[in-house]
Length: 156
Image (cartoon, rainbow, N blue to C red):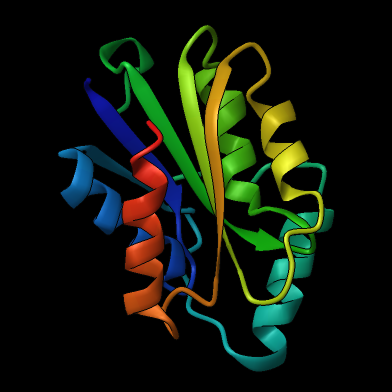
């Protein structure tokens, strides 16, 4: 089964999961990058998150190559921001218009999922969702999370 892992990662948590999926499934990786890649810390980081999540305008992405027709399974991964998937994933969903595909989702968070799963489903309406997973503090618990990813993909 030809698999793509499309993900956005701000702090590296989603990247950890995506790399593990690449290894386990021999998947292609498509990492989404915003055109604004400035690294922020402290209050500046919180302000940027809030701006991205409260804006009705999707952030612009750096160019990437992705053809959904080339894949049997597409796994979409994102951090959870304010109970929703990170806004660059909204941009990806609206730009690609994926429909009629098998999809799986993963989300990384540091406390709670909120309604991230429901919002991911809504972004990718018209597809068969075969699996969902969430990972708490992936970088801080990397060995445990890798074990969880291995168990998760057994259901594909």
